[in-house]
Length: 432
Length: 148
Image (cartoon, rainbow over all chains, first blue to last red; front, side, top):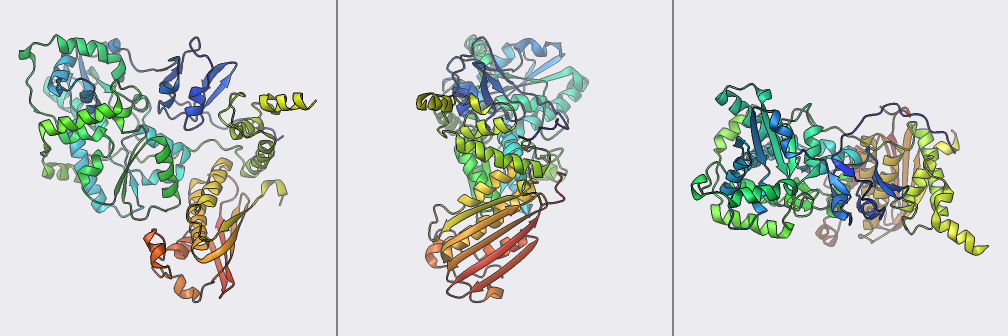
């Protein structure tokens, strides 16, 4: 076997998923579920390979022991700021019973101690309009892919690095909302920017990571994130204790169209053109990215992509069932009406000024190849094929690798020995 | 050239099998990514092999795709047994197609295949004999063997 050369560069990736060793029973559910094959079970415990993990959170739901937890911020974390602002993902509005309306949820958050609650749904609507302008002007390559799901972005960076130029360079609503909030409040309250703390309330582990380590800019406008799972119970109690005078049930400052963003197909239905497709879930996402890569999707101009089934409402850190949350979102739209809440002309002006664009384009982050030298990598590739052909190819997983192919790869990388294949050992034993 | 550092693969393509079309392209793509070729080189290989596969599926009984990759360059040869191309010069024009209505119904035959392969290759050679088949040779320069 070829000698592995030391890695030239070692970039550390920040992740929000943590495996609790004492809880992990090594049952491999997470390993089989991981879309980037980033999990191995060694010594009876699951381990995440940092370089491959895209923080999609599939493993969180797969674990029967609840041993994989998201590392989001404890609620007290932001107390160091003079002014604490909660920015809830519109997903939050779909998590409670239909009798609890968004204004009550916002009032409940204030009761929990946030000085302000800033809404994202209006920004969602404004960015939908910016998206329409972008599609009108864009000259190719087609189709373009939506930028708002960070797990999709990371999946493309890692597994489809050649497609990063298809990602729309528009800013995501949460970041734009945080930026607008900080600039506005800082002026209004006469506070320096760094004294205003922005916390995102989210159903998504990948967004928590993207706040700590953004793919498209130096620094996020957020100072932390709290999962909906974590804030749900205290928030519900706060809402229950609200008096009628503590909130006003109207849509002031909110957008029903924007709330629809969090359900897959939200931006497509806004655009109202026939050449958009909305894809959610890893299986369909993989198919469509494969098709785009070989330029098969010729008639499609825009792909709205969400890693979680049904969109952000299907996020692993949400409380409500995704399908129920979907219906609740539709009911919110019915209740508040689908009238535009933004001024198109104002959006158009800001668009021209670059207000809605990312600070920088998304760059590829390809998986480390078998060897830094292509010639040696090809030799290792062949060696891997040879090893693979010796394996049972049933993907039993007992070696701690998700598939026999990954096992063969780990062998040529020098991480495992061919004798670590339990299946083969038993076969040998029997034929003795 | 050290034999170990050369990838040499061969795939069969069955004519008329639209369901399987694109399978070879997907397979090659994943191999090249793993070996660590530049993402844009991988993309060009993916596009040109996909288009070539589709052409075989549409116009031939069967075909063979031979794939050779060294760190410096990638050579793809596709030979098919089929109807052949009457006027190669016409066939190379964008939008020119002899596809049947049925093929068009399935979303193929927009007349972009050959031009698309040519656009994505550094060298493109095509020969064809009516009633016998077509041979394509596509060369894609991968670089000097090091990663940029």
